[in-house]
Length: 136
Image (tube, rainbow, N blue to C red; front, side):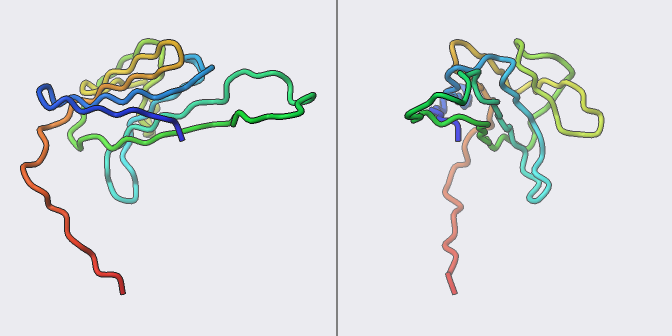
């Protein structure tokens, strides 16, 4: 999992997620906007390839965890898209057309191993609609 700090600005209704991706460049990162096929929830999925590293041989101790990493963020169902390319980070929808798309409501930047996602959200709901589910 990608270590992430998440902040919501209640004045602008912008959710900012700062994803830590040390040692990775923009070309190692993929950001995808899609709809989950099981529950129809819109989501942004960030995936990253492992950073370029030394050869596997010769290690006595290897404490850093390497490999592909990912993180999923739920976005509002009305998030819109238009054709574009985002600051060197590929952002595309997983559909049959396989076009490169940029959501109007999402901006993505990457600098010094820190990926910044800014997601425009509607105002928060006024009340708590949670319900207790009985375990049988």
